[in-house]
Amino acid sequence: MANIRNQDSWVHSGEPEQATRKAMDLVRMAVSKVGLLNPLPEIVVGVQQSALVIGGGPSGMTTALELADHGFPVHLVERSNLLGGQARFLYNTWKGEPIGPALQEMDARVRSHPLITLHMESTVTDAEGFVGNFKSTIQSPRGPQAVDHGVTVIATGGKGYTPTEYGYGTADRVYTSIEFDKLTMMGDRRINDAKTFVFIQCVGSRELGRMYCSRVCCTHSVQAAVQLKEQDPTREIFILYRDLRTYGEREELFKKAREKGVVFINYELHGKPRVTQLDPRQLEVVVWDHILHEPLRIVADAVVLATAIVPSSANADLARIYKLSTDADGFLLEAHAKLRPVDFAGDGLFMAGLAHYPKSVDEAVAQAKAAAGRAITVLSSDRIGLESTKATPVLANCDGCALCLDVCPYHAISLVEEATAEGSRSSHIQVNVAQCKGCGMCQATCPKDGVYVAGFSMEQITAQVKAALAL
Amino acid sequence: MSYEPKIIGFTCNWCTYAAADLAGIWRMQYPSNIRLIRVMCSGMVHPRMVTEAFSLGADGVMVMG
Image (cartoon, rainbow over all chains, first blue to last red; front, side):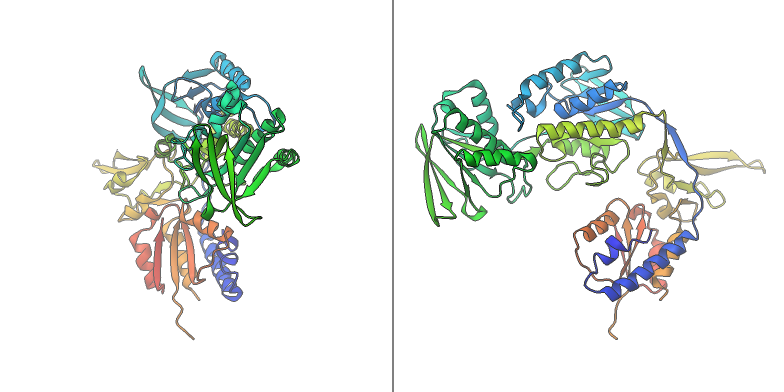
């Protein structure tokens, strides 16, 4: 392919003449390579028609149930001794549907499904293989167990950031959103009897170290404010925000909150609100009011911190084990945000839920169903075609020196010995095409041109270099 | 005319080549005198490819991965 859009016109938009000259070079380079291409044989391997799902929250459970309902056996691995993940701490969805009962139903279905094998208090410690043919080691309290599976779905979730700011942990009546939900669910008097509430948004999000938006916190605070107002319209509720993001239909909640008299005050990163304890029952919150242009002092009965969502610590280990990409914050990275949103770059590996980025429980469930759908495209057939970009031995040049065996990261090359016509023995390499990823370390190592990667031979690359430098 | 070096860049299919695409999406700007060649891994670039590029007239070779 001559990449004249992303790698040319978009990056040299200020110098159109040079960009056109580069485009001509890129096309010439591509054409010179195409002339040397050969048809590549299709490589087909068998598929183990079962799945491994890592993470027993709503995302993992949904994926497992979808796959099992389609008739595919599933191994579901959960690190803790409970299913449900972070959703166990959640109260309602943004539409007001209670999460607890839905989670219990999911839990019961997972435990009773004949095709789901549950591995509780277990982690995946090792894996090998490729799409259709993975072999993972699950470490449980009873010891390690190796399972064969055709696809892997990572749904390891996330967790709430534990704040150190705004008096959290030292002042009384400062809660995280999750703690606020729990107290509300239990009918705690510290919430029930409170009259003035201050919600502080973006706690731990969108600042140095965690530049991302945690997506769910605006909606949660606005929804909680509406509920508090509905219970007692005389309550005073302040939401201190940086940018309010009640996206999509959640905007209705924001409108409702405005109608009910919830006060929204904008603050900037350089002038964060200050929280001080007045007495065990009251807190003082001082925030710079951007309309009055002076500090506003609020005496509050409760301060609720809309804390960030951070990725699971398991992501780093799994990224190493399955060779997955993560972003700078430790969230899993999809192959393409628009075209392959639940796939990893590696085939047969999919993701769902908070492990990917902060999202609401309904979005996590939708993504889990998408991951199951993508996984089924692999599992629904007992055979699958692989990329044809593979290392190809040139037997005329290979003298079996075996230098390439040591550099191959996938252990795809082995040495075979054969008797020659003269009666002596000669050896040469052979490539396991299912294991070979076409990286070409062998090609760069071989001193005798005894192996090349189909589609990237020395001759083809040299042709490109020549074409690039021809004019 | 001022001297304009010709640079050959070998880019890994999985990281640098994808990053170069991303640079386009973000509309980042860089000098137009580099010609990128996609390889399956920077480890695939034989030393001979680098010396060959120089002997064919490249002023600089970048191997990125």
